[in-house]
Image 1 (spheres, rainbow, N blue to C red):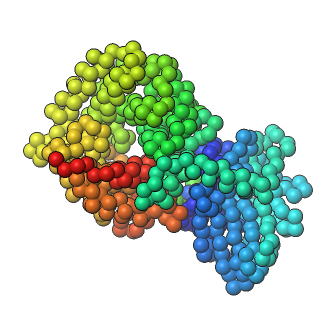
Image 2 (cartoon, one colour):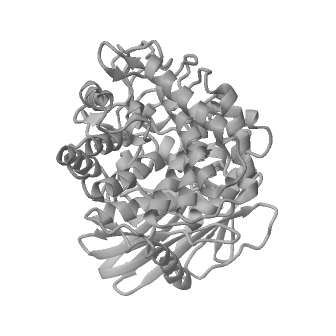
Image 3 (tube, one colour):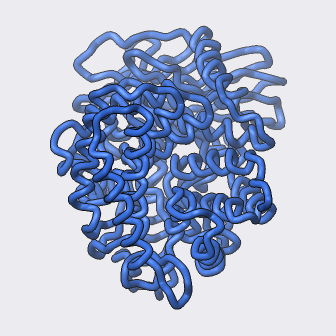
Length: 599
């Protein structure tokens, strides 16, 4: 069985990523891209669905592990009765074929090692044909091939669908294994030398991390979050995935098991805002180019998400052959939310273009033309209901957050037009801004309780209403804002953290108001949003306490998933989650800012 979600470490090469457990097992890897079918899917089943374990023979979890400096190079160490050993895992940044490198190094005494490689292509469904050629084991099935290069002197053999390796490592000795993927019709695999690939990989990560602008008291979690966000960017195109995993459950045994290996416009926009605040402009420029390619065409055809190269077809399917993480089924690949209307994404995109402009990235005319097209569509459709930020599957509604983000789009468009002098229907945009504002205040506000609610005509609370202040829609000292913040804090509390919205206390076997069965954990990004809101409304100490509490949920490597189960004390959902790490970075910057002067 796979480890707990928080037991996993992330390694990657800016085109895909792998999850490595405390036991030395790589249980998730999709090749050659984030959204490709996996060759290791033990995360969603068992070792028979694909994994690669490399650890002392008979050993359990590693004794210690850490990233080497500000990088994605993972060191896992075991101390045994006969000695100590380190396994260093990393994926070199690449131009062509992806490589997973595992270097075994003896530290003390001698340690008997055991390697077990089970390649299973197409999400654990296909058992490949394996043959030996020199120092390589080559696995082939359909369009995929994987080449395992074994160090001299290490004995490998096939047994029950597994390529096994047994060897002894002494103090000062090293043994390097390299797994390379390439299309099966190619006959000669690109070769890398682990001894040079390791320092080069370290240098690249550390050179990038050195540009971080944050110097506050939470530098370590902020920088680890920024490195994680960088790892989720697909370097060839600039697209940014929401997470490198699929189908990790929001409730153990439940059905909320989604595939996040795609580029949501919302998540990508928020990720870019965090990277820009951290001082990383290159990613913003690359993402803007990706955006122009992905959404080129009629603004009516704008999707909520795309493939990493801008693909529009993201069909949701169910993998019935996989039992799911701890029995959480169905296991879904692809995502049906691609066909939803989510009007808030227009605001996220325009807001990010505004942030890029403020960061000194010039507004080219073709980008301005795109913005005008988006605004023209939004002017005509902002009054429509949609599925909203949370991608509900029970019908469209007039969500307050969607309307507020439509206001953000108009507001930021006006500001950019005024700052650049570029041609624009500024008077229309100002009129839209005023109309949306009046509409939200009239219809999204519960006058009896004095708070903003999830959707027009409803009474439900929603953490996304915190954006009423966060976006500048209303000043943070407005009594309506303060009461809404209090209502979210008290009404959506879940073990000291924050649920997304009302409706997750339904009895077993019944559907929530969002049209999905069962519940979920506390949503970590919402908990950070509440900390932002508390700071904005003058309660900085309470904000700091909440922020510290949420950061404390990260695993030993600083990684956070989407949600937290306060009762079981464990992380839930896809891992690591961009949304969560974005919110961490933004809240850390908010708390680093001086408190506003008292009136």
